[in-house]
Each structure stands twice: as structure tokens, then as C-alpha cells.
Amino acid sequence: MQIEYDIEKDKWNQFVADNSSPASFLQSWQWGEFQKSLGLKIHRLGVAGESGELIAVAQAIVRPLHLGKTYLEITKGPVAKRLATGYLQLDLIIEELKRIGEKEKSIMIRINPPYEDLKLFANRYSLIAPAILLRQTEPNDTVLVDLTKSEDELLSSMHEKSRYNIRLAIKKGVRVAEKTTDRSAFDKFLELIEETAKRDGITVWPRERFEKFRQQFMIHNSPQPSLTLREGVPPLNLREGGGELLNSDQPRAILLTGSFEGKILAAAIVMLFGDSGTYLYAASSAEQRNANVPSLVLWEAIRAAKMAGKKNYDMWGIAPAGSDESHSWAGITRFKTRYIKAGETGMEKHYTGTWDLILDKTYHNVFKLGKILKKIIK
Image 1 (spheres, rainbow, N blue to C red):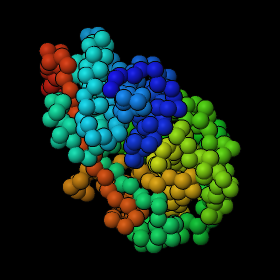
Image 2: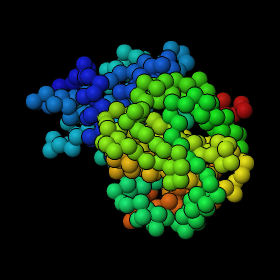
Image 3: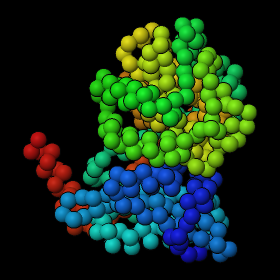
């Protein structure tokens, strides 16, 4: 086994798509390019087996800190094949990341791995729970919808309230359409996501970041013409053969809008990669709540991912296991979990979260102390 750096884009994406489920789009080649467009430096490395085939990869983002220091961030990675050699390929990845960290003056490597049981992994590499909160991380808890089930099975198994809301939206004439390359629809999404953030007290990307995301995943990797969605109810239909064409190993994002009485009142961005569709961002207006536009948009997003040949639909974020109604995500958790029947048409998935591998104890303690003092001063 040996470290490789010169890995071609399609080969990289194919490996990540084939060896992660739900597919780790955060480890896709294009996600790295997106980070570069934001001014960040990235490192891509892999491990090749005896015959030259890839057996592990990791994409690390170099994030700046004060005092000329940085840290490496690996989200939903490393991605590795399950081999009889166990952790040997990950050993090589971790050791190489340490060397990269030294060159980048990193105080630590922050890893958010795509595993549910991290005990052996954490113990092997001396990982610790984060002592410094640096930025909002990706959700560690989610809901997966089983897209191998039929639409009838999915509908019949969901909570009766969700099923009622979907049917009521259809009856009222709510229309959902795919508007991935429509500039005006994207602008409306931006308005709605800002309204949603203000109303619900959540943090979302600034407009500039959404624009760069659009360029990377909705323009450069536009699903047109392989994805053709028809307006109407039920509105989403793939052209014959479209599902197979869209089921590629290149990450693509689609924009769905929900309209009532001619006005867009809800929208969602869905990432399609590997075996999965991901409900990445959703937004809605406070107007005409009784029309249940968001409910139909979510259902049509699930249908679109299914028609694109995906096996999983990742709801992308619920409250942690054991949370009560006081949790800020209690409402959205209730909304999302009602779309599955656990054990039959989906499941809740709880990852192990974020862990740190400390490279520079002295500076790590300095930054930790700085965070503590900042809280005290506030």
C-alpha cells in the first residue's frame, strides 16, 4: 500500500460514491473545488493497494486560525473500503495527514467520520472530543428514507398528518417544479432562506456562498438535459432514461420550488450523489401556511431522488437522540421523522460526531484558553 496524490476527478468521485452510504458528497471532488472558491486550501490524498486500486481517500480543508496557525478539517471522511487488512489503509491516511498538518502549521486535525461506532477508530488514533468550538458543523443526526420502497409504501407508512398535508396541498392546487437553472427562482430561494433563518433563529450561508455553490453544483454540474421535471400535480417526472443518466457519480444539486396561487412560497435544494439524495437546504414563507406547500415540496424532493435512481434520501439534520421538545430543532425533527416508519421505510441515523487529533498541544491549549477567556469577558 502507498499514498497517492495524483488522483483523477472521476476516479475520486467513483470511489467515494461506491464506498460510502449515504454517499459522502462532502468528500466529493466538487465539494473541494467549492471550498477552494471560498478561498480555502484543500489536500486530497488516497491509498493505493498492491494492484494500484484505490482503497481509501481523504479530502482535508485547511482552515485558518489566529497567530498564523491552522487546523485540518475532514468531514464525512476518510472514506475507505472494508478490507481484511483492517485499519492499515487508514493508518497510512492518518500518518500522511499528520505530515500535511505539520507543513500547514495545524494545531489539530478535526475529523467528522462517516461511522456510527467510533470507539475503535477513536482509540486507535487517540482522538478526543473537541475542546474548541470553531464553526458550525454538519449535522450528526439525520433521518434516512428508504427509496427502494415504492411510492405507495412510502406514502402509506408515513404519519397520517404528513400524508394528509401532502394530499391537501395537491387538492388546493400547489404546484412543484424543478428550477435548477432558473435565475429568478434561485433569487426567490435566497429571499425565502433568509426569511426562514430570521423566523426560526437559525444560521445559513451568506448569499455569496450560495452563489458559489450554485456555480459549482447547479451550473457547472447542471442536471439538464438529463433531468426533466414537468410542472403539474403530481408534478415531477423524469424523461425516459433520465433516471439512469442522472444516477452518475458526479454530485449535482437541483432546485425545487413550490407555488400556490402563482407565488413561490417554498423551495428546496437537493444534492444528488452516489446512492443518495440529500435535503440540503429548505426554505418557506410564513404566508398561506394552510396550503402546506413545504410538505409537498419535501415529498416531491423524495420522489425526484427516487426517480433519479437513488437508494437513500437523507433529511440532513434532526435533533440529537434523547432531545426533548425544548430543543431548537424539535419542530423540524417532528416534521422530518413523520415521513418514515422506522424499521420499515426509513431510519434515524446517529453518527459519532466530531473528534480532534491534537498535533500541537501547546497552541491547542492557548486557543482553548482564549475561548474560555472570551466567554468569561462576555
